[in-house]
Image (cartoon, rainbow, N blue to C red; front, side, top):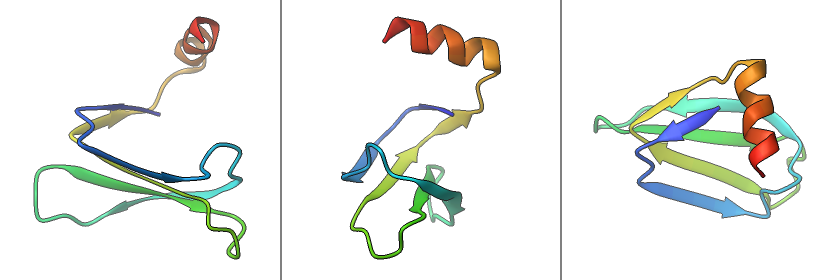
Length: 69
């Protein structure tokens, strides 16, 4: 996933987190709020992003992104 117009990012030990789900939460604004849910319910790890837009990358696009890092 790629996010554009990110206004807020909340992360606690998010790197290496085993992802259970991604949920878009309701908002009273035009911004979109996404919560990345951790598989380990007892872990403090979390990630939340508030952004204007998002898109899902194709396999080819993801390969290009990974080569840049």
